[in-house]
Length: 273
Image (cartoon, rainbow, N blue to C red):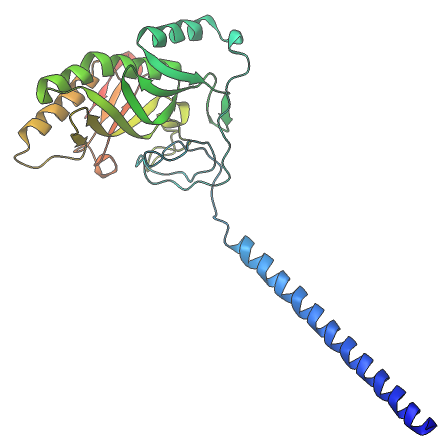
């Protein structure tokens, strides 16, 4: 009887040590798998340069984040780690010129929001505004600009763009689809800061009318006489308001949009191409 009991105790001890070894091996395996998984996740993070982007496919949420330095192609963006725009906390501290400009925005019927100052290295806007509409004309997505650029664009929209659409298409303008407003980047092929990095520029991709027509800025076909005439009006009339108007036919980077900006140049020189 004693011999049988001793054998049973020996077998129990052997089974205990075997189970402990299995549990230890399992724990080590799980730890190893966890370490591999963590490393793989971090290796997938995009390599980006510090910047900010407002260029977005229409209807996408608006934010500032990180973006590579890219040519003036509004859809060539790579963003991560978004920082949501916040309302400006103390608009009463604006200089008189900014207050006057906002009064002009109201006179022009601009729907806008004051947001916090943007300072990102050499890029930024001291008193930015986010424009979502000019009267009944929607801006999609909302554009982050200096007040001066917003007022200039609003005046051109009301005085030139809308009348041109009524004349050519017998229709009002419903939506301006923009591809890039404030965006921290250099001019393609140069070490010069783009006017987008100062909030002084806006890229227009297409113009949607109330009658359902959506006029793409890309160079129209040979027999698209009405579209060609309308886009020629857009370019020519824009040169009376902006210091730079670049579009299809200027270079490859501008093949699909009009670039408008209010860059200051010597002797009042304007670049309209």
